[in-house]
Length: 289
Image (tube, rainbow, N blue to C red; front, top):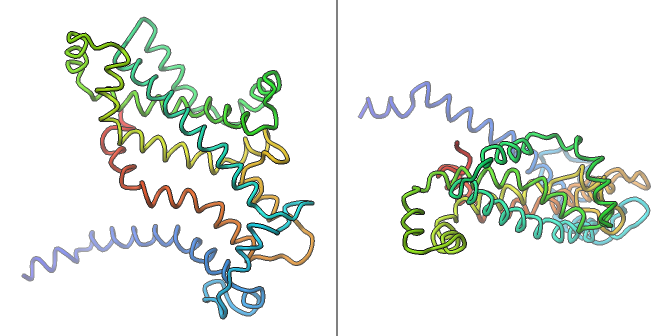
């Protein structure tokens, strides 16, 4: 018993748990401060401290952030920006994930001359800084007539995201035995049949990884949103920036925090609902190779 208790409280174990708790605090304390500040009145904020709970809990800041807070010269809240992000993120995530699945399938199971070179070129896209593609992409969107539109932002995120989703799916499908594909081809199954009836049913973990990864990247993007969108097509990150930097009137920190929480809620919900699938995907070969 003594040995068992000693092993449970060994120095290394205490250090591990202590490090993990510090890491959790580094992420959760700012979220806690944002959350409680969003439910405070301005009087509470002025008289209390950052960590104190509200004297009076109120959702007025959330209502104002959603519908009537000023974002520049307009005072319509962040609701319009929020729905713009949905219109941008949902199709961009779906299209880039489907294209990545097809690319990964072809590169890993239907190898052809130059497939390794093609994969290397796609992989290069994962390491391109956003700033490098700003000018050529702006010219492309202008020629396509998609400048300053939500459709243009969808195209940008699909192009940038395909490199990542192709990498994820290729590494996942490499782990599927080639003998399984050869047996299906001997039975007369073709390109589409093998993909739809054999590979897709076993691809749930990697689909979840790509969906979560892409949704988080696209939803939280600021640079593409501020460069390629304007007016009614700007995403929530740009709206949040405009709200925080609006200098007219009293600085309402509770409204700013409520708007920040509204901007973060979709990604939090996605992680809470699908987080366990993300871990399964990572551990089943999603980002190996």
